[in-house]
Length: 65
Image (cartoon, rainbow, N blue to C red; front, side):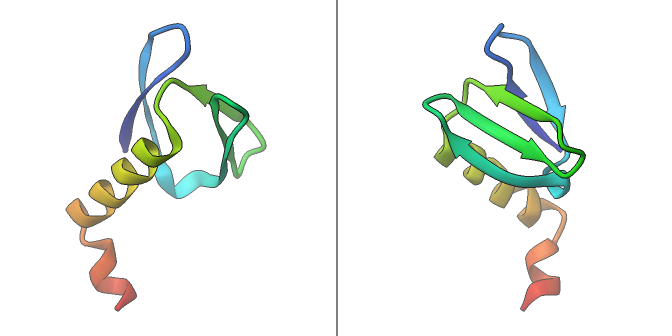
């Protein structure tokens, strides 16, 4: 799970495996596979960095080589 911040300032944890796509609208909007959308304070690059960091921690890249 990655830690993100809602526009209200509340922190929450998101499962990056459930992300369908990310948009900059101009806020960062994350569309989930469930159809739900989440708007976060972090920029797209910060979200992507957190996803890569998380996948490294769980060893996901080893399975993709």
